[in-house]
Length: 108
Image 1 (cartoon, rainbow, N blue to C red):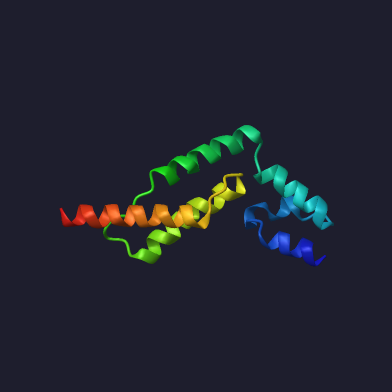
Image 2: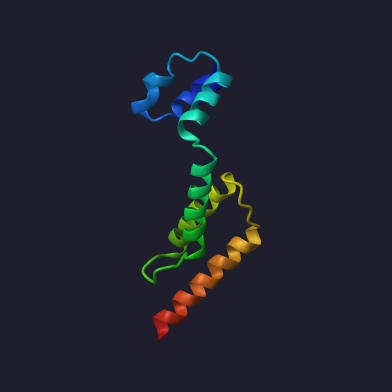
């Protein structure tokens, strides 16, 4: 029941009624995956879109470091969920490279 309750808390309010009748956590999880997970083609499209955003990631000069790093992490997390793996070193390098590019562009 605890697992089921936890899962229900993560479901947006407008979808609560659709899932409320499911009594066990395993069935609820399967229903959530079916409803929100998408099929293989959807996941591939989503992965490609987020991967492109990651590849084109840039840091505006008006943004502070924490905000920039948070935005980068918001791209990395879904990619990891969708099967892309990044080492922390790769993510850090992307961050530093984009910050260097921003600093150089601001000075010019």
